[in-house]
Image (cartoon, rainbow, N blue to C red):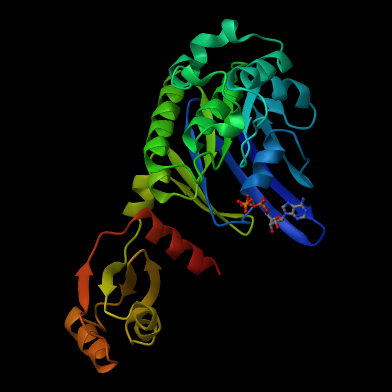
Length: 304
Ligand SMILES: Nc1ncnc2c1ncn2[C@@H]1O[C@H](COP(=O)(O)OP(=O)(O)OP(=O)(O)O)[C@@H](O)[C@H]1O
């Protein structure tokens, strides 16, 4: 049995089609990632699966239970960490955790073993108000709160957004440990390096899934030649590259541009000459391996 099963779910807010016929399933104990730009429908999907809102059409089950008919049971079985921290800022660390335990009719003591590895790291600050914690500590507390009632499925909506890189790394180690305990995790992230840590990834754009694959499949299916290009004038470079015959696509990636090319029409030497003609200096062109972000950009541009 799949831990999450979604069949042709659509959701509209007035005229806005937030989800358009989304179908997928997540296996038990799988970390399934959702990546997509702001407004692509990720939060809407989380809200439907955690029974907070209803879809206009389609069906979904979590742990074999229907999200409409069995909403009460589902609420007992899932943990949800919404995009913005779900903590009570004026309550202390321990009070927050006690509150969530009480809501689910349990106690910290009863399920301490489940959250021990995570909670122990913030326990020295148990009397500190949640509002006074660092981003990484808030995130650990929010995850502890989402876990305290022993959920079988965890829904994490951008849990690491705005958190420092060290805490993000630790957080993903915690997710791996939860997966090893058999917990299923649906997680959205804007960070492509985090997407690489998922078992499978769905790329979502404008309410449509562009594809569902393992990170290795996504990268393996990228067949384009890709170069990283730099010059002394990066803003103008993007437009100049786009006008070159043989350049298929061009996107800014940090401090370089990534360019996919038709090698039968353009060589690196020709591209360098063309950019020199347009006044660029210190041009650097390097053949590179595609990253998952390149794959996402390619899929997204094909769709639009
Ligand atoms: N309550 C609402 N009323 C009207 N429109 C909404 C509502 N909630 C979401 N939307 C719209 O539905 C679309 C999908 O939004 P959603 O929040 O699901 O996307 P998202 O991928 O989670 O993006 P973000 O990370 O920015 O929240 C967007 O166009 C958004 O503006």
